[in-house]
Image (tube, rainbow, N blue to C red; front, side, top):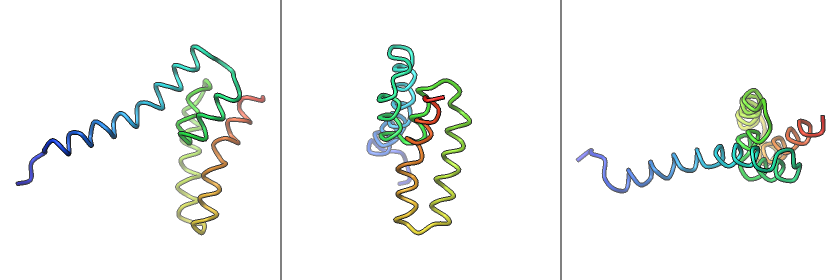
Length: 99
């Protein structure tokens, strides 16, 4: 009995939705409310690197932040890595929106 059941389908839909929702929200807010610092910071805190889609030119920054977060998990103690992962995306968003 190794088939896909209702629970697996529900989980798959939930994972796809949880992945696509932050991207959709960032693009939507970029179009309707562009350039607001507090929205960019909030998206960065809530969704991490994916919150960077609020500002144009987001792909390199998402990849850089993902690399920093993966590296922090591998190289640093857990509490320091968690702090770095929490503050890195909002700091990058602040840098990107202030320049």
